Image 1 (cartoon, rainbow, N blue to C red):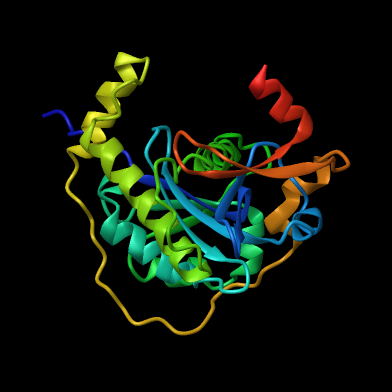
Image 2 (image 1 turned 180 degrees about the horizontal axis):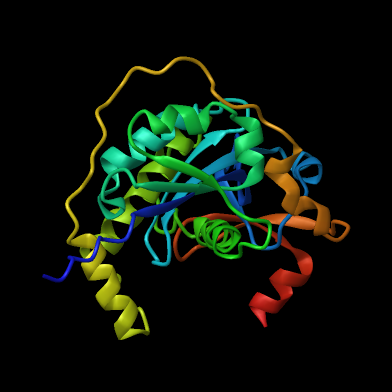
Length: 255
């Protein structure tokens, strides 16, 4: 009798960083930048940074994101529970949660807490490319989340709620749409096989306070940025979004 093959473990990537292309402005609401800007330089324009939290399915273009102001961080446990309960494409909790070394240093209890619900936490090797690539992809795509948003409520709370709502819409739409547009039939088939899996939804639990420490690693992308150049706010008349553009970028877009 042949032994039945064991299913591959479900694996998610979990990443957290200061949003590279999104900030909040008291007058404009959520503002996207086309060219990254250092946080201190952004402050000169009245922009305050946001934290991006994301989960991706290993090896597949399935992603979920949420955001908070940098001075109002959420516990990792809360973010993960929300994702595993509300993001249909993740199919609930994974068997394996892969994180980078910064997250395990910032939250030493993460592995022990997740083990209680059957999730094994592993730290990605320094040579691992897929996890950082998932974070870069999330950063790049986040700047387009608020396209066609009316932006009437530009307060910090209202803007963040709208941003998170549109991130959820984006996830839901891509799952319903079957990720059409993927250029590989093989990947399409793997997506459909993944989405056919039964969801492993964890039981909701009450959490305590913040379970991690913020640090400079959140904005490590700043280290490679060139000196800043003059910028100005630009309202996109097509989709209603507000951008902070460099003069050079504006000239490129208008010629």
